[in-house]
Image 1 (spheres, rainbow, N blue to C red):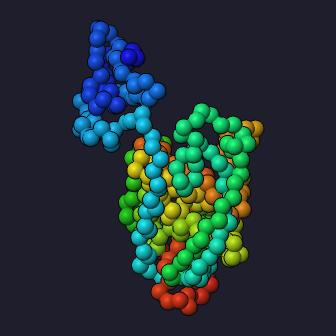
Image 2 (image 1 turned 120 degrees about the vertical axis):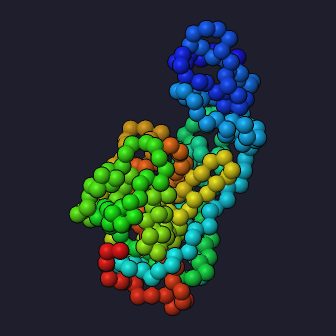
Image 3 (image 1 turned 30 degrees about the vertical axis):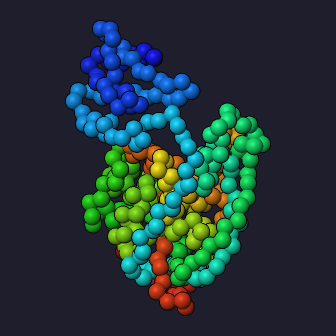
Length: 309
């Protein structure tokens, strides 16, 4: 039993038990039961609030158990238009990719590797590792040579009235119409914002594999400032969502192996990004580029006129 102080006018919920937290005494304290070797949680809100999600089955609420689950990849929606800007064609067929990544607590594709131990230290943790991926593309894919710009995204906002797809967090600069004349990559977009833009122009985001194959093919030019790219490589294991980032950023925090990898990365480097809620997935160092499915094995020309959507 843990006693926690809260504001007297707030309503507190025991997230693990799915009920209102008990108030055994007058004042600003509630009691929450934390299971042995487990975790507990408290959610407080001011006034009345819809707490129906707390009545869900226990398996969908906060649990101290964290069993290994195989992550499933979200199938990207196909594109519906031809490329409308300079692009690189990634041919259909079998490809073998070498991928480098940093081993962190969240693991890579197969879930968290250190669930049953506390806590491994470098070099077992935070070391650079390499894996090979066998990739089969059923059709050729065109990948844009540059990120979507602030100017292009501003045109999307003006035409559709798009607001942040996931509310919360800091208000992104583009909501105020900033960057309408800028060719810099648009940032402060989350996966849903990027997908909304891509659907508007009839494209989609490239998968991490398509992104890497396109850049390793030498056809994409690097812009300044360089930003991490969201990819259409979203996975879910039923508890967490994550997406793979490619590219790197000009910013790099130094001094500790605990810091996220920064700087401009080689095309083979992949970063696993856990997708948080409450609008916290938008970052000033994360943008995106587009891709299109090509209808015939012969593909399309390697370049197309760069025109505004």
